[in-house]
Image 1: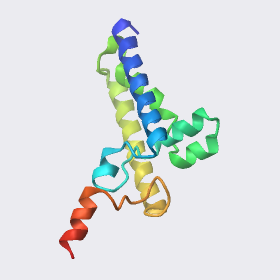
Image 2 (image 1 turned 60 degrees about the vertical axis):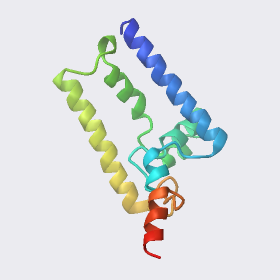
Image 3 (image 1 turned 120 degrees about the vertical axis):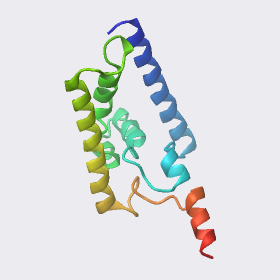
Image 4 (image 1 turned 180 degrees about the horizontal axis):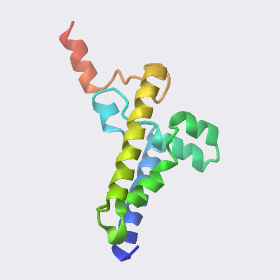
Length: 137
């Protein structure tokens, strides 16, 4: 990995760390879909999973998101050589496979845990859901 790739990786790591600190400090969700629409996205629970994993609570981390350990691998694949986006067919195929896996796990988690078990719960304070409720009153 060249200088550009290392720099991009450092920015990604710093961004993830800042998000984790913000989430822990405020107790708020950093997920835009959850915050605006009120429904969890395929990545919901990743931050809390990593906070728990870094605290060596791996069982709790897997409860928040069973695929949290794939995120570093996905970041390395996305950065690629010299900080460029992936171009090789195998790399693009692997990234698409990981994204498809995240979507499949999201569907399963929605079916099993929605709407009662965090992080697969509803944010009734989200602007979209408040708008929907107000329009049906």
